[in-house]
Length: 312
Image 1 (cartoon, one colour):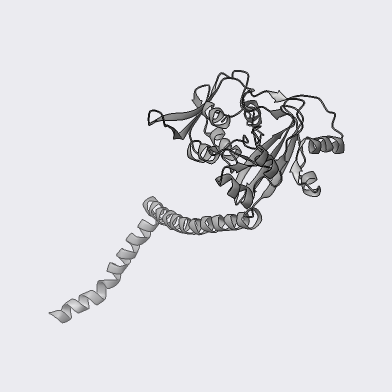
Image 2 (image 1 turned 180 degrees about the horizontal axis):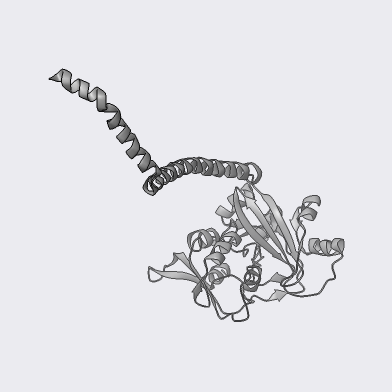
């Protein structure tokens, strides 16, 4: 019996395999197989793309951080400097500062830049230097106005030339002194004889004010609308002091920030920053919100609480 079955199998087996081959060929040529094959191929590509993209992304992050650490990870590195001769018009002057032997930033330096570039001087309150730099691997922006600005009134002091920025603006010693509430040069006019002889001004509330009560922005709005882009910009202009230029007597006018970030000023109504940190009221042992609320384009970036502390 088994021999008979074997003879039949050997005789007709080619038909069985031929039929299987035919069915496979038919399926291979069908549109369903093409869909199936495409799905497998795309899945293969996606899995490998994700794998190699992750490797590339991790390498890019590593390379970027390495470059920043190498070039900008020093105490201070100047990237760009611009001279604004009015509200909008600016000149790239980075190469001048890098070629000059700069030890401080003052009005005389701006006058020299005007002369060197042969720029016609047109008197206005918006003449300023804008610095883009890295300090210990983090990017910041600082300003130096041609005319000193009173931080309590926001008015330009046209006749006052006796102020400057140290250059570099920040280093280990400056930051160490800052943690001890020592700033020089400073916003304050209240110099004791001892402070004059030691060339610094000390207010025991400075570090706490800007690092405990004003460090992190919770919300930023213009005309009652949130603006994330500008919020990121304010993280740059707060400087390592977190003070928006105030402590070095170089506060920032709101109008400069809006114009430089292409934000319309024709329909301006109000500007508002709310900080995550709260103010501790020692009298009634309570916390209150800390915010900056401005309704004038020429106002400087400062809160009423900051003015109160800085006036002590």
